[in-house]
Image (cartoon, rainbow, N blue to C red; front, side, top):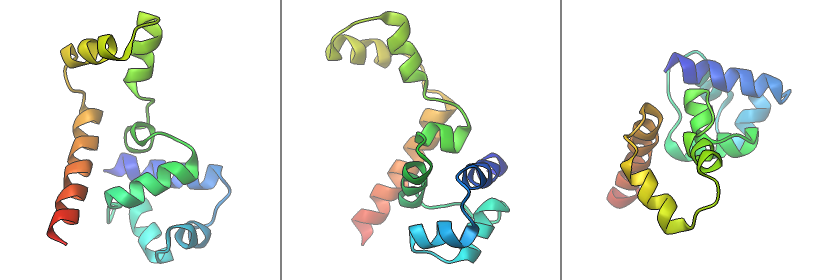
Length: 115
């Protein structure tokens, strides 16, 4: 997850935010942000969502450093209705980004259920 650590640091500095300012926006300690950026800890899914919103990027871009492939697929296929799009997407194999987002989402749901 060193890639995620570097991505958080790059996006934070691009937005001209200090670790303290980012921590304040997320209601966490500066030390937590520091651990994320050093790769010593990983943000929970809810914090990843908040980070993506603060930085104005997608979760795919935040976690993997690339834009979602779904947007590219829609542009390549042109106009299609929602059902056609879902059918075409169901044929596509899962990418590593899909799996990462799915794991974070499932862990978030699991935490929500047990609390």
